[in-house]
Length: 396
Image 1 (cartoon, helix red, strand yellow):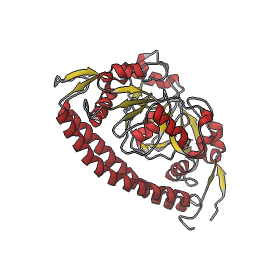
Image 2 (cartoon, one colour):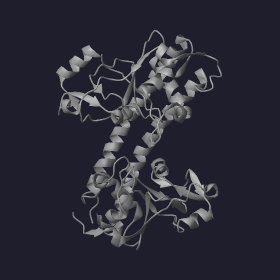
Image 3 (cartoon, rainbow, N blue to C red):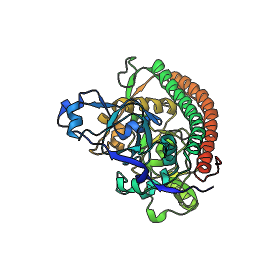
Image 4 (tube, rainbow, N blue to C red):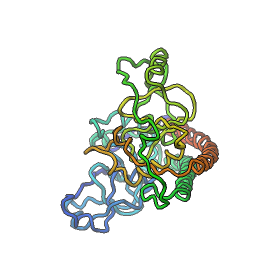
């Protein structure tokens, strides 16, 4: 069933937020919630807290741009298309658009939220800019949304809310497994920064080979063959996500690289050069792939000296606390090979490292079951989303 389409600007009032001057510290010492893109990213669809709060004077300096409870916040920069509904009154920066229905009998806010999820990819294609892509208020106002009667909107939103809750529950359980592993690590080995258990410390390059790959030029990439990963893909793998390769090299090229420089082996660690959240990928099988030089760092783990699983969680803990001090750069803190080589690693007995690795394997196997469940709940949600906005999910 096809429903009439209406311009979003005709249905909703929209305003962006603003950023008080950073050179006035009193502006950021208030009690008014002030949302940034990162707050939307961590909100899980519903936002009631923000990392920073501003003063009344700060709010006045940005024209009293504040949104009431029940406003849909839309990210216009970076994570274009991400949304969250406010559970309290709050202000935002200029990278966020606040959207409110002009007439709540015309459009249901949770329906609108799911529709933005549905069109997120097409919004990304319309984004402009280099490092930080963005969309404009004008683009959002011109978007045309299918508009069934309000009761139909409410039924669609209720069904999608249930499917969304299912996948969120699976994600939350996965996150708890990760928290458990980190807690086990700290219990067994202590804080990687403080080293309160006084383990011997050695430089990483004294126990492992640290480097990157041989350069692969753009003209050497092909449409199919052996997967070729950039920092983005390695980061996703390090976060435990599945990826679909989009870049490849020929098998002949791969075999030559294998002879010239070697290729990652089971147990080796790879990480994007910008890695503040510890997205470190451990190679778990012999599936062939290669990766971009410079943007991906490679630790060839010497199993005689250190357990790769222990090293991975040591680095994750270290980066979580000390990344900005370790990495270099102005706009983006980037890990360089020489920096990674010089990192001092605590070296508890190998037997204790191996014990931790055995526990990690057991938890990882349990996580795999949840990952499979998450795939199913994700596929269900995406399927229902497609049906909903094609007019196939709920009949009038």
